[in-house]
Length: 128
Image 1 (cartoon, rainbow, N blue to C red):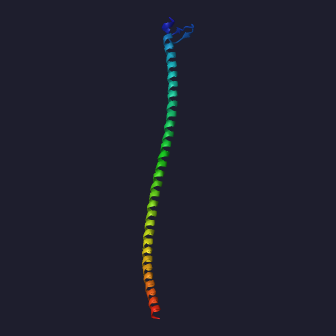
Image 2: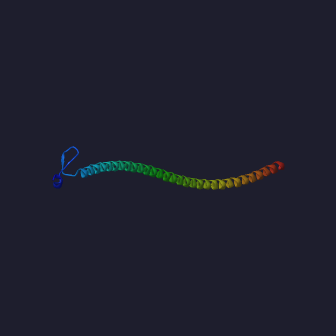
Image 3: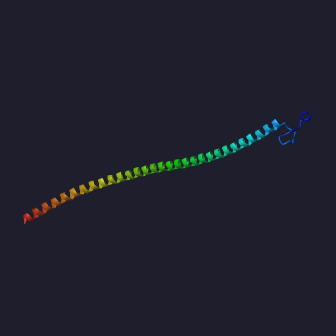
């Protein structure tokens, strides 16, 4: 008569509204849900730490990328400085070559003048 009214006794002889099988299934489902929630929380924790690790690696990669870009730019800058320095040195070499040519011509002229003066001195000495 109680079963028809929806009342049942459990294993401890307590009066229950649910059938013992349904109550057991509900308790089992509750435990499975708790286990699922625990596993889900653990999964979220693992995923969170994985995301943090990936973020750290991304920051490290970005930092290395910036260092590489900076080094490349520095290298280009040094190359341009060397080119400019080389051009300055080439101009200086050309200037010094021109100066050397002027000095050579001046030396040859002075040698010629010296020879002429020596010849004049020799002629003057022989005339006396």
